[in-house]
Every structure is written in structure tokens, then in C-alpha cells.
Image 1 (cartoon, one colour):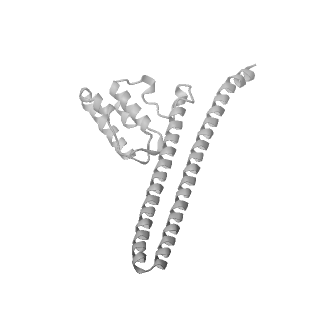
Image 2 (cartoon, one colour):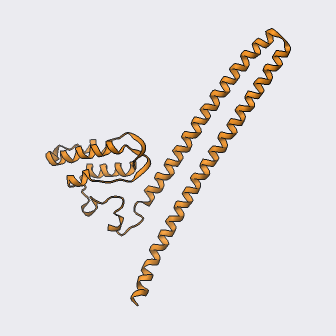
Image 3 (tube, one colour):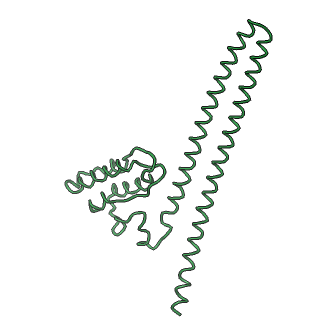
Length: 211
């Protein structure tokens, strides 16, 4: 593959992906090495190269596939310089749809899991703090009087009720996120079906116009 095609390669930008600056710097370095010493390129190192993952980075599957293509020495001919917008060259408008769907679903699932984990950790911390405080008050109450002990029990009950309400809210949020994920999947599948229908109808329209 021509070095200029390596350093000029473009990728889909995802919600979470490989750091764009790091990927671009590595491709420039690889292109320079191909110009100066192509025999010295380590294919195994290229194929296993990893990058920092962050917000609005390059789609990871695309970058890995491209590096594996370079490592295998498959220049790909007319496909070597094609990016994710070049599906018209192959005549297949659905070439990357599966990858994009998987990327959207994976990112949505990761976001839902991260939100749920953080909320559950916060709820567990609140419960532990509430129980510790209630225990301290209960000990003081037992030493002071029975009325104070009852008050401490009431504080414990209120704290646990608040924690239970918080957990219910977390579960509702998780269900909402999963519903959004399911809706996004249905929307993408619907778009995919529409594109397939449009692709099937196009040849018929062309035949009618010729007749």
C-alpha cells in the first residue's frame, strides 16, 4: 500500500473509540517507515497495536481491521484507499452497516452499564453511611434513654427508606436506558430494511424509464 494512503486513511468517528491524534501519529510514523525501510516493518507489531480509548475517537473495529490488512501485506488494490464513505466503489451500500450497528449497540450498552455501576456504588455508599450513623446514634440512645433509642430506630428506618427509593430510581434508569438501546436497535434495523427495499426498487425504476 502506498505510504500516502496509509497516513491519509480516514475512519468513522464513534462516541467512544481510539484517540484520533494517537492513531494519526502512528499512521504517519508507519508511512515514513514504509517509505524509508519497508522491509523493516514488523507486521505482528502493527497488527497488535493498541491505542488509548476516549470520547469521539476512531471506530475501533475499523482501525484494527486496517492495521491487520497492513500487517498481512494485503494492499487491497482498488480497495486499499477506500474509506468508510467509499462503499459506492464496490456497489454495496451495506458494506459497513453491520459494523456501525454493532458499534452503536456496544457503546449504548457500555454507557448503560457504566451509569448503573456508578449509581449502585453510590447507593451502597449511602446505605453504609446511613447504617453507620444509625448505629452510632443507637449506641448513644441506649446509654441515654429508651426514647432516644426509638428516635435512632426511626432515623435508621428513614435512611433505609431513602436508600430503597434511590435503588428503585436506579433500576428505573437502567430499564429506561435498556429501552433506549432496544429502540435504537429497532430504528437501525428499520433503516437497514428501508435501504434494502430502496436498493431492490432502483433497478425496476431504471428499467421502466428505459422502456
